[in-house]
Amino acid sequence: MNLILQNLPDFLIGARNTLIYCAASFPLALLIGLILALMKTSRFTWLNTPAKIFIEVVRSTPIITQLFLVYYGLGAVLANYDLAYLLNAWVAGITVLALNYAAYEAEIYRNGIQAVPIGQWEAGASLGMSPLLTFRRIIFPQSIRVILPPMTNDFIALFKDTSVVSIISVVELSKQYQILTKSYGGFLEIGLTTAALYLVMSVPLGYLSRYLEKRWGAK
Image 1 (cartoon, rainbow, N blue to C red):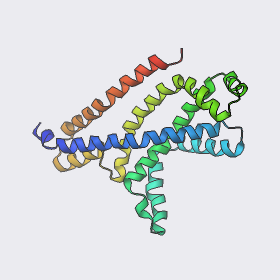
Image 2: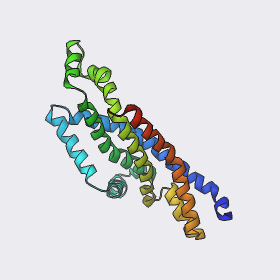
Image 3: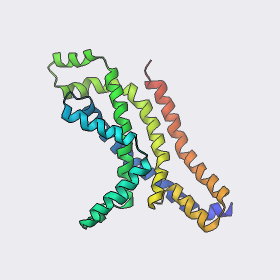
Image 4: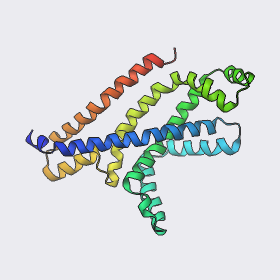
């Protein structure tokens, strides 16, 4: 117990960094995912083809591989042009998490958009609305009930996937576990404390997800 109390500030710093990663990467994933969904549902090949390729590639490759590719691969390219400072471990981690989850959010958006009857698009057109205005005022508000529950589930998944950035030396909660056990041992004690912190932060998200599934889920 003394070991945990002694290192409690380090645990809290790791937990804080985990939350920062979530807060920074998930909004980006939502924005990029929406753009990808609109591109994929477009009737123009030059828009939907790149979106389809990106989504398939990202969803078919491990996130750790993507992290290595961006941090080490892209980092090496930038270093050749003296631009390595643009891609530190934090930027690389947030970028990879955002792009990875954007591919999944795009499919969630697409399913939500396609769940709205096609007649709603026609109704917007009959009122003189542009496709973009129809989407913003008619389609998207109706698709929210389909989109929100799986979106919150993805947020919980991203919260846990932040642990992957520990491999590029970002000191989030999992990396803090590695540092402390290497210094003090106590694998079980430190591991249980780390798991407890993850639990404390993720349980409220789970309740939110179940609430949204009940409140907004399609009947």
